[in-house]
Amino acid sequence: MRPDNTAPIIAAARRRHELTRSKAIQALRELQHTGAPVTFAAIADQAGVSRSWLYAQDDLRQEITRLRDATRRAPKPPIPITQRASDTSLRHRLEAAHQQIRQLRDERDKLRHQLARALGDQRHTGPGGHQPPS
Image (cartoon, rainbow, N blue to C red; front, side, top):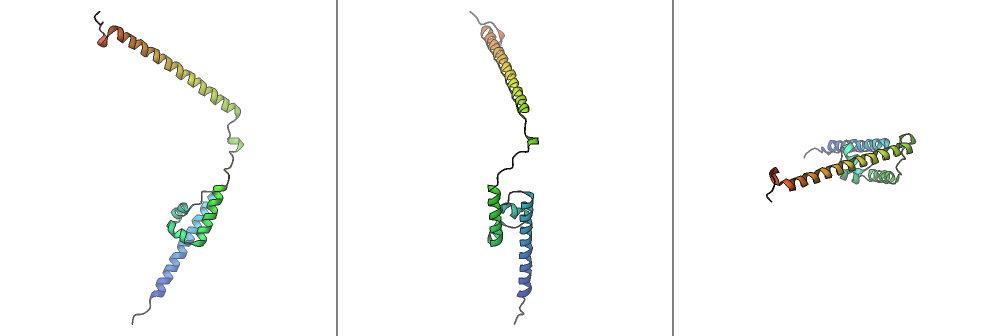
């Protein structure tokens, strides 16, 4: 009869399972700490585990779902006052944009006039610069 050697195999599988769980929990904590979106894909990538494995772990699945839903509902933080554009700054940018639009329109009109003149000259002289016979 063969000796029963399943105990070391089962022990190794348990150690591997606990190591995988600890990686997933650590990834979850890191994402939560950095404020990054908590998703199954993000945790799976960071921990080096499959998403299907995460879904199979009831406690992890519930925690990920809870945190994912909480971060989705959280309002976006407002831009700090020191980083907001002032009314004066916005007015200057608007004036600069209007000035650029005027310059581009002037350039467009000038090019249209040059094209009309060139086409008119071509019509009077004919293709190749020769005067068409009358």
